[in-house]
Length: 135
Image (cartoon, rainbow, N blue to C red; front, side):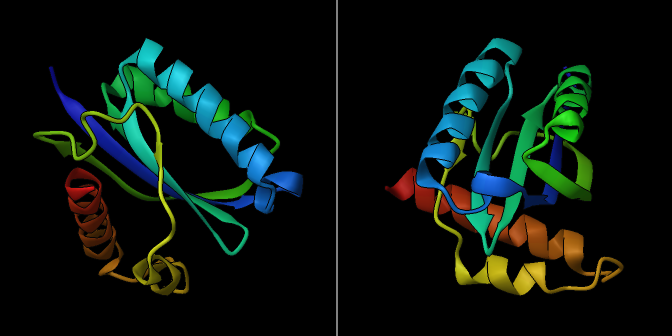
């Protein structure tokens, strides 16, 4: 089975931008849906933006991305990385939420056409995965 990882950033809209209760609701629903669809990943919220990495089969990722694009809590969604992977970075997490590290703030100010953006994304996710495993 081929696995893929999509990483996107979007503007959080309304209470989703800063409400803890809204974030808890998003994580809960995402966890349930991702378990059903055999997806794994991590979400971070930083300065009114969502940063999310999602891993799984292409068909399941495409279905999820369609739902996310229609979700009114997101605006200006931008795909930072969409690639085939050999293994999951977040195999035990249907949807983990972690605090945004300083590297994410630096990543969010990069130009969309920065040729290093995918490498920066992968480093950030690898570091997040290691931190979660160690915790």
